[in-house]
Amino acid sequence: MIEDSDYHPKGAPLTGRKVLLILIGFFGVMLAVNFYMARAAIKTHPGLDIAHPYDAGVAYNKEIAAAKAQEALGWTVDLSRVVQGAVTAITVTVKDRDGRPVNDLVASLHFVYPATSRLDQVVVVGSVADGVYAGAAELQRGHWEVEVVLQREGQQMFRSRNTFNVE
Image 1 (cartoon, rainbow, N blue to C red):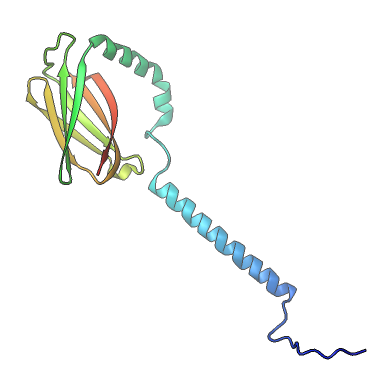
Image 2: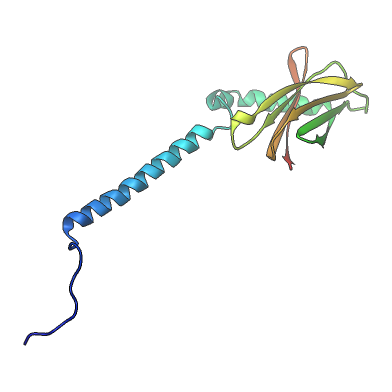
């Protein structure tokens, strides 16, 4: 018995060669995009918090000793932040255990943008009054960390890391 149908295939039939080319094209595009995205991610931020992690690991005991020495000083260090347009001004107030201002320090602020190290800035700040040090940096919007380092005669006396948002 012969059936009468109105179905007539149009176009070229789907062959094994066409399926192979479709699969190769699909996975080729997928691999190319993945390669590009991985390369762009590594190029913008390598994922390291510090430049030389091995050296920092070896010096870890020195960091612990410095933290204990910092605590023994009994200093009170207060930070205040004022945003003036695109400029963020940081004021550091340092007092000793008895509440007297601590002078003769060299203070520096290291602004760290966690998403990329390209925006990081180091600002050496000056003394504006007894025990008060101030500096400013132009920071873009986002989450920032500021590392405050206080030195006397080349020796680090105090270090603190603080986070804030610039809106």
